Length: 326
Image 1 (cartoon, rainbow, N blue to C red):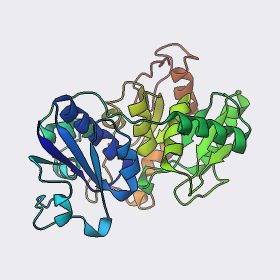
Image 2 (image 1 turned 30 degrees about the horizontal axis):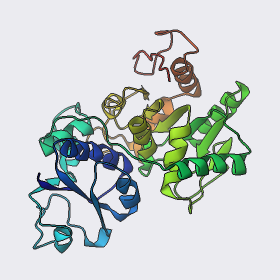
Image 3 (image 1 turned 45 degrees about the horizontal axis):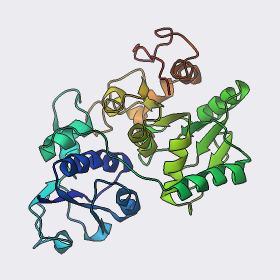
């Protein structure tokens, strides 16, 4: 048995979720796994059955990107040690997406597994206790008056504002879904802004992280921009329709068989890197995202819920959306 330290001291949630697949591969090989992560994700990582120990790292103390993991230089790396191997997962996707020539064509999970030199062993796993699951039901019943009611979870906000879709369109989407008899729940953004996207909203800044996890797990379908809950849905096997502009939906969603995506029209994904095809009109966000219409998203939802036949609905990139059963 080897003692392995997996290093992902920076966010975001999607990357941490995919890095847990590396932990699963090492655990399958019989290794003891310690996971170093941003302290904001420590409770989340702690719920993985493939991680033996979690070391939360304050941002002010972490090593800079592309710096070798040297415990003598960065003493926090000695916590819980010594280790037989450091698996540094902070940088590989960042380096690839910003330096590769031409179009990005590899998904981050593949990059993480390649960097760790491990075979794919399935996505990472997270546990939610029965009490927490009951608390999520209580939250839905108490705040929204819902019993065991299926709902569509709308995720309009990303920490990277360039990935967001227009707020008025989310409001029109929620209203259209409501007129069709679908219950919707919208996540307020990280500043807790409410009342901008229509329908019932959840965005209590003091809510524990597992509440978000439980809401994603409980949803019938998630509709999301390229942000953390999209990856949570993938790890949980919950169908998700992703909306993509400056990042490539086919790559982000590739590890998740339950996911489908709509790629914005007008330009190839630039990953919002200065000098790589960015246009002046993108200074306030990805201009291509504005080409995704409410009708596009409704058609995608219909297809994923099996309300139309396979091949009848097309995404903006003319890729067929096939129904996903659950």
